[in-house]
Length: 340
Image (cartoon, rainbow, N blue to C red):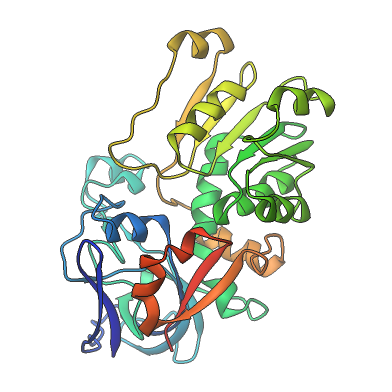
């Protein structure tokens, strides 16, 4: 099969590699689409991802496809079933697994990081990581199940209540999902903070009440204009030091600030503890997607979250190096790699 393997900083190579035969409890999936994620970008740039990487490794962990064949003890799926997969496998034995927080597992293995992932024609994985895709969900949308599941975990931690005012900072791929989830969770007002006009307009179309361009507009003035007296929840989806600091600044009294976007591993932000004290802020972060993948699939099947407007580019597997080199993933929307 053809697969995009990461060898070193800035180098992905399309290799011919064998399709690994499934063990008794594994399935082989013929991959349709695999999305490019911030973790893939960090790894390509020679930085730390969400898990340790040992090259050469096939990157990619946001994928959909069809079951090709199964091991003798894998009975949940059969050939031809439409599926997606949770990329995170936990040991089930460490302190965190034993105490209800398996996503913090000391020995977690991740598809596309420590294990071969989805930028390939096929993948062989444990059946317990595989989930069905609803018949009314396209393969392209199904490839968004993993990022949606991560957003769900972040939203769970943010604890949005009915009637909250929610500010989403950065309305790229993740921000556009968060806008929809915040609206569905019962926010009375959803504010999209985004300097890119095209992205800001998408956020409005997907449920934001109004947008703010933080580079050209006075945020305080815009909030006052819309009679916003307190921002209850702020979700930073951009993952920049500037947006981290902006999020803390505009969080209201008693607010939760969710620093969801992935910053560089060595980035540091300026934080005034007195500001946290004065406003009694709670600052949180969110790591991967515990107990959320199956829910994400149901939300897609119910049509609650729309992914079609978020996906803007589909690129052949053979051209994947160019996507990373030109930073196509950072332009208008989600880039999917076509693997078949």
